[in-house]
Image 1: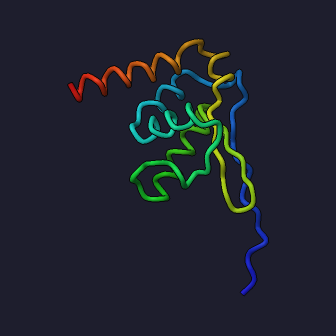
Image 2: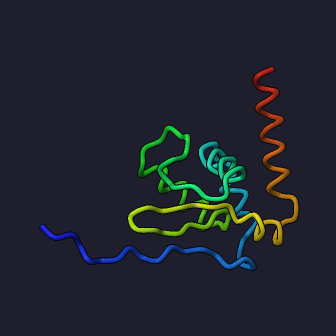
Length: 115
């Protein structure tokens, strides 16, 4: 049977000036999404199925959607793969220091939990 010729809908990304603080904070409030953000902080771009998270593919897709629609990440499609990258410049322009502050607080909390 031939493959469908239907194209997937275009990915929704808010413009920089439309990124909302509450949406960003909500996106950063989940441990799985924070894992994605931390990985993207050290790697400029990564294929979606290669993140070190232990969730079902449908759940991972949901987490990427929340991050993308909040303006935390951008995604692009290449053939049948989707690649993600952090919108560091856009986030810094909208909310200077926010991402660094959240990541530093997370690191401090994790260090305190292991001490």
